[in-house]
Image (cartoon, rainbow, N blue to C red):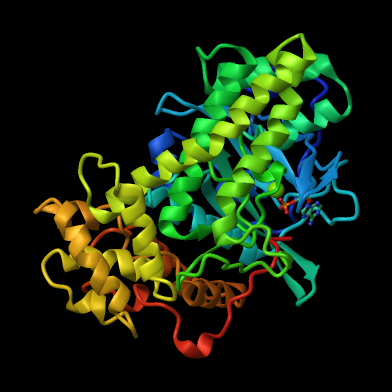
Length: 469
Ligand code: AMP
Ligand code: MG
């Protein structure tokens, strides 16, 4: 059993609708995250029943949460959990409060035209990528299980096996949650949400300004970490940005292979709004949307509130840059701080254009001893050869070990993810399980697992991802 303590439904009436998940006709467990369950002290009596929604565990109070969101820049005042159910919250044996949520578990009053369901492939994708992110030490929601429902869901590709992912999150409070009540002028609910979010995520910070500063810091650090591993979220809509600073809602996300700032994988991102190099700009844009909802709490004087907000928004780019340079220092093996580190990192990026992002950093660690493997990545090595002596002049002698501990050998390579999900959809879980083992151990040596460390073969072509619906 799980000891639930459902603070969101208790403390924030009017911000959600009670809604039971669908009863899946033939739930079958596909994958259970036993290490995570153990880490959180969860006793899972009926994984297939609980995590498909067929059996509501004792103490759960299923609800669909309300939120709004800017999607690709356009505002939707009412989105909400259209295919997800918050089962409730529990206190993990790590001492933290966690949401337990099902996704793909049926229609809710927020479903609009959607069927409330999910296909197995996208739910396994969330499981795999969020496990990879956790292993890369990047804040993220965690996947606890994927269960097939025994139903077929109809998608463009035809009928597919239906599935539910169970995930845990620090919370599901999104920028879009604040936007929902702001757009409706529900100041009391906004106030309650503000107090709740501070108490849950940033206890001790002072009021709305304190919360905003804390979210800026957490999100800036998060996006800097994404950039470090070449992660492209793909749908950085405001409803997919969590106040906790966790990565949330894995849809068409993917890891960049050859470094190109404009890289986009998602089929729906036609303008490249959420391209790799745009992510830090969208960070600022989304945080401006959050600030708008908090203006009344920044100051009773509207003009002063706007001045306070603007001063903070102007500072975000610099806060992000500091976080990014810190990430790059670690990746480049630079200990301590030097005023030239940002420029050194910028110039490395210029030198590795078109080269596999992950391999470039990994082999830079090897280059502490021997540059050959690094240089073999380049068709024209002029820029990197000019850069290396500048780096050496700044490098600590024994940097290689530390660099290998932050620059992964293994990321979820797109061609392997696709092959694993395709096989799983046809009933063969072996490639998925094999890939999962590897992405959970990203920093260990390549030896014996070379097939997981190299970019897609050239025949793979341009990679396109589709929204997880
Ligand atoms: P997402 O792209 O998963 O972040 O979802 C954006 C919005 O669409 C959220 O409000 C979801 O709950 C809703 N949504 C996505 N897929 C479905 C679906 N199959 N049925 C109902 N609602 C959905
Ligand atoms: Mg979402």
